[in-house]
Length: 351
Image (tube, rainbow, N blue to C red; front, top):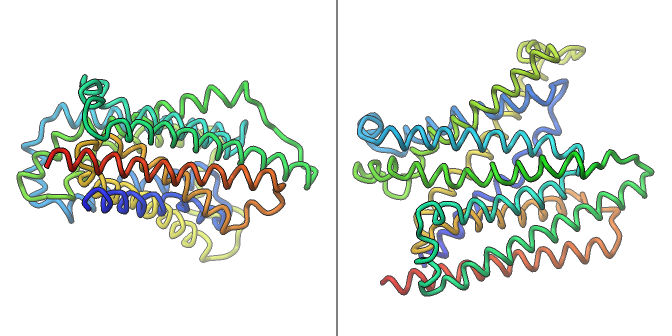
């Protein structure tokens, strides 16, 4: 039952992350870097500290006792994750959201899942355990489902370009390297959490329980904020957009700036929620905790597609495109069921 609860927590986190960027559509007169840095401050700097302060007993004592090398490693790997997120944003302009999502998230799902056991030299041992075949099959099938979902998205984009007579800036030559970089570095985030586990182990000694992972986010997420802030500051200097934090140029509505901040906070809150529930789910996944990242990524793509349907983003797509999407969603659901069963078998075998 704990594994099922773990998957449900992952599902809650993925559902909040899948729609966290919808508030951005309502912002007024803000450049991308202004909005991105504002929401990044909330989800990668502010809320991780608040979340740890609320849920980790004797936080200061834990930080003093926790190994410093784990803090450094989690921060550095988190910085790599931030670079991956920036590469993801840049790739969208060349290959579109859907294809970028398929390549980057598909790679991230595999890299973030297999990297921790590979580095620890545990993959061979894991593969000999009960249920491991189901888990690895679930990871592979999930990656396939993500790829097909990306194909459906690309078909939809082409359909809309034809229907609305839009010009395309599609360039696989420019976009593919960015997609690959985004996928690999985004997958590193799962490893950042793995390397920060010694910090969480100390938190457990002080009674953190299932909330133990919240203390790792202080370092992994601040690393992501650090690398993201560097790029956003570069854009601010290059485009002279620092003033947007104080005043919206050409906008006479007095509440517009406040609304932008509220929308950025909402995005940050929803984005951080995925980490919060990821940590809760991860502690319940049993013998195959390393598969948490795959479960999260697959659910993220699944819910993102569903959100797209609810928001009518697929209206105008051809029947062929919708059938491809239906196939992708079916495969994603199947992969989650397989991963859940594999984790259940692994947990039962250790009892």
